[in-house]
Image (cartoon, rainbow over all chains, first blue to last red; front, side):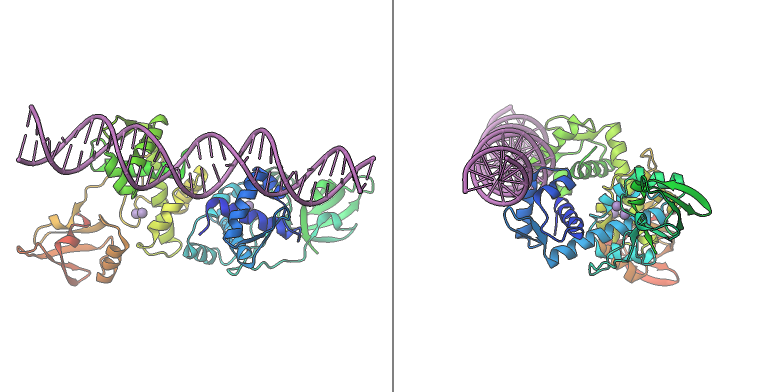
Length: 217
Length: 217
DNA sequence: TAAAATTTTTAGGTTAGTCTAAAAATTATT
DNA sequence: AATAATTTTTAGACTAACCTAAAAATTTTA
Ligand SMILES: [Mn+2]
Ligand SMILES: [Mn+2]
Ligand SMILES: [Mn+2]
Ligand SMILES: [Mn+2]
């Protein structure tokens, strides 16, 4: 149906659309895929012929309903595999992404359905990102950045915005784990750093960190 | 390291070498990969430059030690994934090959080591084929074709030669399962068909079937 | 061992996916 | 509104992995 490369383009456009709502620019896609704008133009024409995107010269690109469903299915596979790697094969959450980038391209509906069942139908991946259902629908939960909490407020840590292994390992080192309660004891006016408490441990957290951690109030 | 296509060539040459000992011919590779001889010549030159095969024009090709190890590792992955699909995801043994053909190309040493452990270090795949170890070594067991058994002899069913889904489904239908004891009650002179007993059930088996079933005496 | 048949290689072409450099269109700035 | 800066597309080229058709080498057969 779609080549490895076409799937990567679709997934990228899907992710970019989630926080832009407008047509996705050639340059944005190129940057995200670490490729050249001219390559993107070529590919986008091909995807447009395959009816997964709508493309107007110089106006960027949008996914069709079919394209969105196709892309969501790749994301679904990516995230289910990440859960598998962490839950069953003892990978840590900062090691799974690269492997999932490969596994997401395996074509077998039965495989992914059985994997889903084997994992007891998880709703979120190890980074707190939601797993699209079979129809490509995402259940978006109301989550906020830790940086939006005020003094004496608290919430459950439910996800990360940046999931680079550097950031994830940093969280590991600090003992910040998804599912744990985080309470803000102090909010520093000067640099917006926070003094938080997690698992009875006090931690000082920079604004940069607080901007990359999601909590559910 | 190696492309998808290079890996498929390596694996094919590896399989062909297992039952020929001589240089593998261009045509044999082409037939096995359903491609053209001219394409094989091209690829074989490339593999030769990468030092995984020794190639002499018109003389066929042989794997180097490095090539053999590389190929065995792909076979290892293929067979471990087949075990995973059958043991953990409830695939039947006639459904796993196509998916394993894709999964065998996933590159992650950690993944395959963890998978191996997760499956409790299996030694054989669902078709009775041995799983190469990390160094690419195969433990070959002494097995014989069912067709070589004489009247009143018996053995344990340990593998299939043909693992097409048609044949495997035929075995399912007849109740022939790996690990079960098969005893030969009669051997028909005329067409070399066998009257066998498996799990207290009597079955008449053609020579073609008996030539595709391995038993351990 | 010479002719015939077969196998293998070479030559030249195609497609997918990428690239660089230049042209064209759009957007921002004065 | 004209010019400058930026973005996007086009043109032309490259590589990997294929293909067909023809040439060359090997093997078989008579
Ligand atoms: Mn990921
Ligand atoms: Mn993730
Ligand atoms: Mn197989
Ligand atoms: Mn097998």
